[in-house]
Length: 305
Image (cartoon, rainbow, N blue to C red):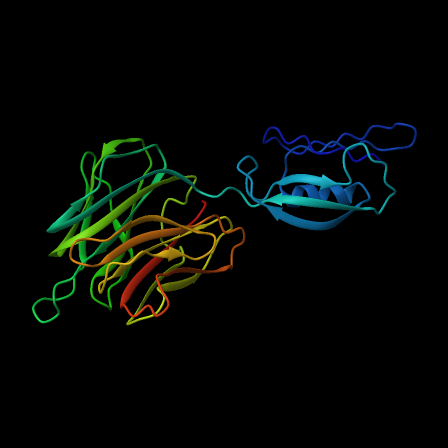
C-alpha cells in the first residue's frame, strides 16, 4: 500500500484516489481535519497510530500537518499511521505602546496606536494611590479612545493593596485609524499604561482565564490555567512601597517597567505562547532576597479564536 504525504497547500476537501497499480492502492490526502483523516486511514485498511499536536501559523487548528510513514513508503495492511495535528497559531502582537507618567492626574493617555480589522486591543494600567488616611484606593473608572469609539470593558482588577493593576479590552472588527487610548481614574495619581494590539486573537476576553492577586510582601506572582492552546499570558503589577527593578521568571519578558517619582514600581510582563490548554501558568517577578513590599498583580489569557 502506498501512503503519500498529504498535500497541505490549500484548505480543500479530502481527496482519495484508488488506483490499481500492481495490486497496490494509492491514496492522496489533502489538508483535512483529524476526523476526516482518521476515516480515510481506516477506510484504506490502516490504523491511526500516535497523534501529537504542534502549533502552526499556516494550518488551521484541528487539521493534519504531517503523517508518518512518509511519502512513498510501502506498508502492509493494518499498519499504523502517526499524525501531527495543528493547534493553530499564537496570537500576534501587532503593536505595543506605553505611557509612563509621574504627574498626579486623573487621566493617562497612550501614544497613538493603529488597529487593523479584527484586532483585539488590551490596556494594562498601573497607578499610585493616595495615603489611606485621606482618600479611597485608586481605581480606573473608564477607558476610552478618540476617533470612532470602541467599547472598553474591564477584564480584571487587583487593588486590595494600595494602588491598582487593571486590564481593559476592546475589539475592532474594522480597521481603525491611529488613536489615543485614555484611562480615567477616581484619584489624581502617577500611572503607567501599556496598550497592546493583537491579531489572530479571540474577539473577546470573556471566558479567558484571568486572576487578581496581591500580598503584603514576597515575590509578586499570580497563577491561572489556560483555556485554549497557544495562549499568551500577560500580567500588570503595582508595587506601592518602593522603586524596584523587577526580574521576570524564566521564559517571561518585561514589556514595560516604570519607577515614578512618588517611589512606586509599575510593570507589565508576558509569557511566550503556551502550547496546551489546561496549562497552569504563573506570572512572577523578583527584585531581591527579602522582597518586603506590598503588591497588586492582575493577569489575563490572550487566546486564539
